Image 1 (tube, helix red, strand yellow):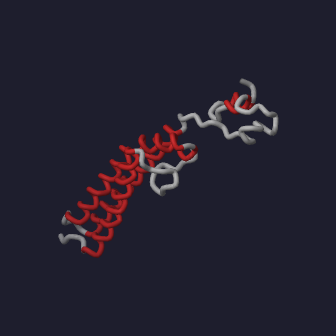
Image 2: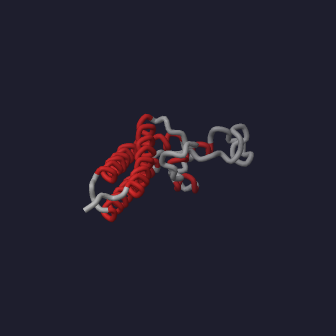
Image 3: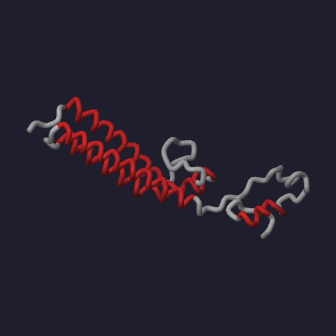
Length: 158
């Protein structure tokens, strides 16, 4: 039984290392709160990018799971290069590790999105602060206090 050739195992390992680095960076910056909504990394669901607070919370919640994805991808990358298994087994190990890491990243996104949906987001005012809504001159009162997360208040029935 011979080990997989390096021209197969090295590219697979590099793919997993790139994934591990991205997931690890997302986990570290998400936990620290240094991700911005304009960055490419992080949870970017509509609920998460609705406000800075929602984005920060979504990425803090997703950080441990994305860190786990980074560990899985890194360990599998090492295994792909080090284990003396046939080519087919090397490819299967790499694909299982890739699928597992991507599944963890998707789970991190779902958890982050659920957390972001709990953050109330103030509704945008249709007009400026001086004129209020459509020129009714309510200013900071009236519809300005309606939250988007309360559909009854937005419909005017609350």
